[in-house]
Length: 342
Image (cartoon, rainbow, N blue to C red; front, side, top):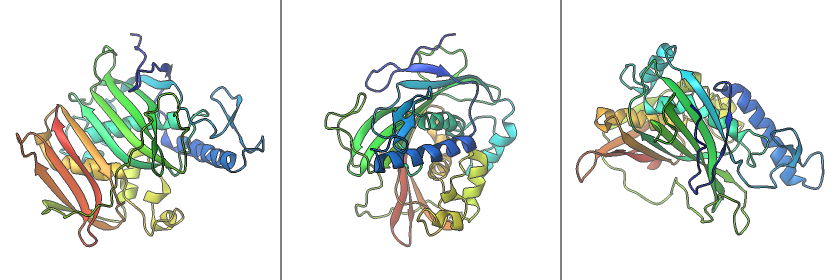
């Protein structure tokens, strides 16, 4: 079937570009590093035509970093099979403390769709640098189970560029449907990842598709009193490498203390989506088959490290849960969020 063009949150219709398959993250990060350097050079030396020039998707010259408009395009890959993912899925489930089964957890579907969204962010007309972008929040809607053997349709795009007190934020959206499903119906899985690009500014009126309002973002430093913990994670130094092997996200900040120090961290840090998916696993089967899962990230988890966790049932009807993870010794929040049934 022909996929209906997706629309952004403000109603803009996007052009769909079909890709031959889900890309690998390794090559995308290499392209992202090159693009990030080009954008940085263009911002530092905008008057030099060679240094300040970027490339549009068709290879034509363009000014890197001068136009903060997101590309009006969505990438799509259809016919994504899952019947050969059993070993990979079970390794993920064991690492994240999910029950080993044929059902693909919400966090695993994020791993599956994430490279397609990253491909959007390394396009020649994407105005922000991939390297240095901060992942601040996620919202995932799950409307039913996806199991081994299902054939999927995956789409991804960027939207909602908006000002932030420290730069600009945007949302990277990914959707998963069963292949052949009516594209006008809600996806079985939809993830919205919010990123912060520090040091950028929008024009006063904002670009097309921007919300035009500032946001404070997540990771608030407001004082808080930790609740009574319901669990504790003891994360070894290999945690980042283990999740990287499954997710493909081999960002140096997660791999070792030596590589993390080059980016200003005293030790390697855990992937944010590892900690979010671990909290979702701690919620357990009470989340049901259809739910909304949210997370806001605070201070990174240094590895090795210990994280105290509290999973709290909803006070009204008991169908939802909130969770928070923190450093008990320093009283710092690492993440917080909730799970509510749809």
